[in-house]
Length: 70
Image (cartoon, rainbow, N blue to C red; front, side, top):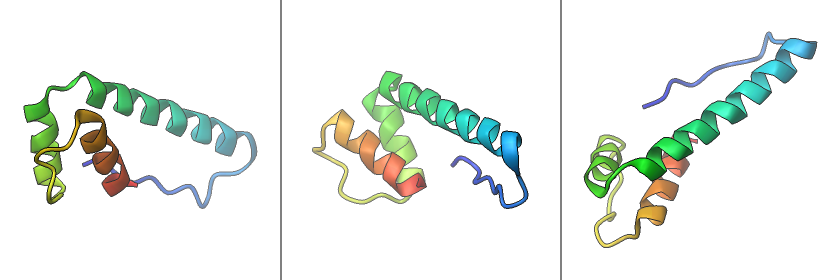
């Protein structure tokens, strides 16, 4: 599971840079999930304790993983 980052004390340009980096990292993570096979996605889903993922399309499993981590 990815660690959560807190930015309460980040100001001005640093906040803007942090936000841009956070978006970039999220996109990279989505790309990583898209490249994974079904077994790898199921392993992550099980670690996140997601139920009822069998029978779902790959895209739906990725969505549930991202939703659980948000």
